[in-house]
Figure 1 (cartoon, one colour):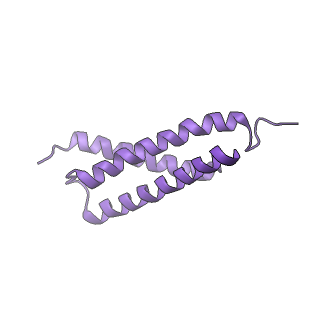
Figure 2 (cartoon, one colour):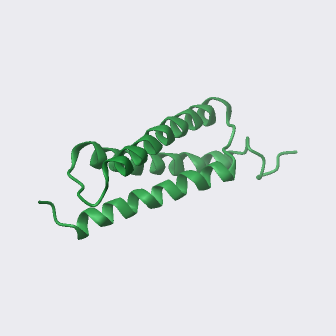
Figure 3 (cartoon, rainbow, N blue to C red):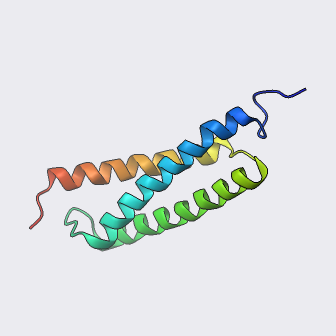
Length: 103
């Protein structure tokens, strides 16, 4: 008997695929800002640390997506929450770029 809460569930896959795509979108947006824009509100060390976190998270999400696609295995919710918190940082970064004028 299939339970809709098992990691191999089609429901889990249908929920995770767009979520993982959203993570990749926002991580990519933030990475582009960190790599290509002047962000005077960030110290160089903060900038590098955030860029490293985002780069690692992108690789993790891509790996999770590959596993989900090939095996149907889901992602632990604690990992999802870690990525979600990083997306919140990405949103905050975008907000700061709008509230701090570029020189």
